[in-house]
Amino acid sequence: MKKKFILGLAILFSIGLSTTACESNNPQKETDGLAEYKEDAKAKLTAYIETLEPDDYSDGNWALVQAAFMAGKKAIDAAADNTEVDTALNAAFKEIHLVDYEGRDFVLTISVEETTVKHGEDFVVDVCLKNQSGEGEEIFYYYSPFIPYIANWTDTSFDPFIPPQPEVLTIENNESFHETRHLRSMGYSDPSAETWSPIYLPIGNHELKFRVLLTQKQQEIEIWSNTVMLTVQ
Image (cartoon, rainbow, N blue to C red; front, side, top):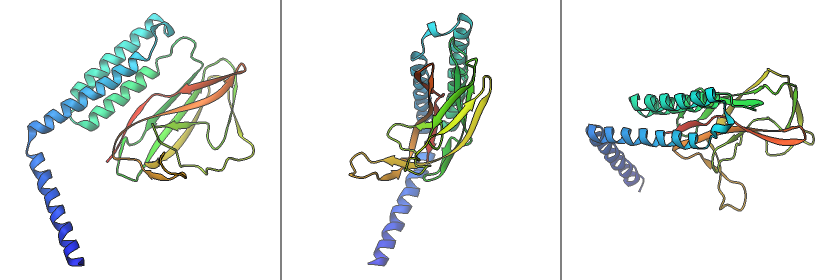
């Protein structure tokens, strides 16, 4: 039985190699796939722009947003492969996010060392919160003030047991707080399971962003970062 099982694997493996070889010899299929990937990236960028309100910006800053949007689409069109498409899309997201709009007291930004990793590897993320509110602000948090968000994903970097007292972080005006996070590419929580059950972050593309919750002038404020496209292979 063992010999038959090994032989079966060998046959499946050879079939996989054969299929890959056929696909790589079809340049038209690869070109069509890249074109579709670019259109999907431009659609994501357009959807992001549509969430913004021109009235939140000065005329000059809204012009910068539009310029970054157009430059992002051109960079996506000029990309030579999927990785370059992701890089162009992430750069556009960040540039648009960094345009200061009227009334913005805090700016939360993220950047990722490698936006593509193998199944099971970590993403290394730099998170930065800048305070430009005009005064020092306190943030109360458990483990980290930065909360990562991917749809249906649970960050498993920290112990699930909450400490009895929160930490307090004070950021003075015009100062920034940085943190490097190692996000596991595993940690999806299976909603059908009776108990919390982590499973691997699936192979494919995922949209990552971070948020910070703080209380300012007796109101809870939710601050979101730019979006970064991640790929698990």
